[in-house]
Length: 232
Image (cartoon, rainbow, N blue to C red; front, side):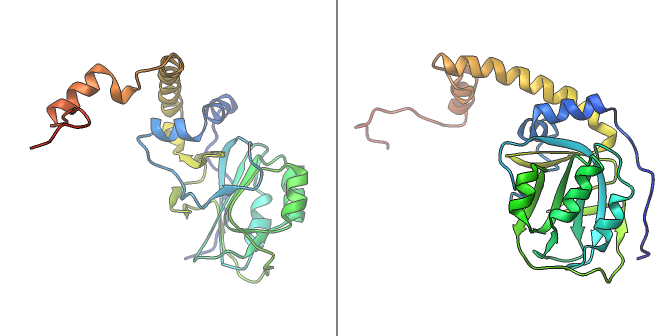
C-alpha cells in the first residue's frame, strides 16, 4: 500500500459535534443500532471526561510513532487523533511531548489503539486520552505510515471525518454522513429515558416489567408461581 497524507477531509458543524458529545457514548451507540463501539479495552486516562471531534486517522507501524507527529500537522482545532497500528501493539507511542503539541494545536483528544506513556504528566495537563495500555516502552521514527486513510481502531472502522465520541463508557464512531440523523435519534432516546428515569425514581415499574412487556413474556411461556408450588 502506498504511504499517503490526505490533507483535506469532510467537516461537521461544531454545534453538531457538541450535541453528540453532550448526549454521550451509551446513548449515541444505542441510537445507531448498537454499532460503532470500540472494544472496551479503550479506557480514558482521566475519568470523568467527555470528548467529541472530527476523526483525523493515523495508520502506524507498531513501535513507530513517526506518523503521529506528521498527523499533528494536518489537524485543525477540535479534531481528534485516532491512531491505529498495522498489527497488535501496546508500545507507548504517545507521551507528554506530543500531548503538549496537541494541546497547543487545540486538538480535542487522542484515541490510541496502542500504549500511552508519561501518564502522570498527561493527567496533570488534563488532556483527553483513551488508550488500551499504559507502557513506558519507547518508540522509533523509522517507517512511514499514512494519515487520513480508513483504519480499524480497537475493532471499529473509522473513516477520516467521522465523529468520535468518548467518555467513561468508552469510544463510539459516528459515520460522518449520518451524524445529524444520529444526533436527532439520540436526543429522542435521551428524552424517552428521562421519562423512564422519573418512573423508576417513583418505584417503577421497569420497562421490562410494564404491562405490554409482561404480556409478551406470557406469550413466550413465562409462568409466575408461588415459592412452594410444584412445576409439572
